[in-house]
Amino acid sequence: MTDTREASERFDCFGSSCEAFVSGDGPERSAGEAIELVRRRLQTWHEGFSRFAPDSELSRLNADPHWEVPVSLLMARLAQTVCVAAALTGGLVDATLVDEIEAAGYGDDLGEPVPLAQALAVAPQRRPATAGSAATWQSIEVNLARRVVTRPPGVKLDSGGLAKGLFADVLATQLAHHDAFAVNCAGDLALGGDRKSTRLNSSHIT
Image 1 (cartoon, rainbow, N blue to C red):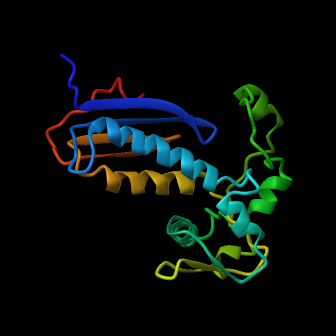
Image 2: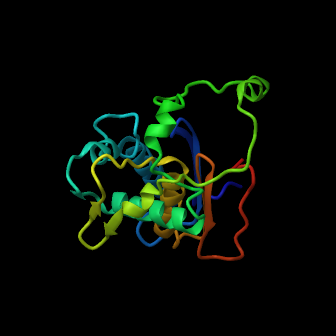
């Protein structure tokens, strides 16, 4: 017998696939409504945080000529995450290298993936990663209370995996009062729920 209080969905987003599974109705919405919330918010965030869309909030932030830029709370949190990730990794995770990424050819949606053998054949020789000497991320300041990002004009942020991980964290907070949930933000996962004894069916999230 299928539990009618369970819901799941897989949908295209972030140039990949996203999935969500929710078990149990929460105090604010049913399992089905929670799945709809996940899909709607991820698709909205995809539009707002894409550097490929010139009208996205991220693109507007990157193009703004002012030092101080008012942003949404979630964008401020992304900018803060960029700084924290860079600091924790000694600059190895640097989401301010937009110009370098685009110069390397990633200036638009990559479309269909290249076969692994072909990608390895044209890839440069492997070498240990090093942090960029400019350390541009150190010039960014974030005021979450005011929702303002301060940085020298021309410093750009790339959302990438940091944004998807942040989105997973935000959704985990919003789904925390359901019995159990799993969210896959194109590879960034969040799992949790109120009822520790609940077991997730692995067929829902693959």
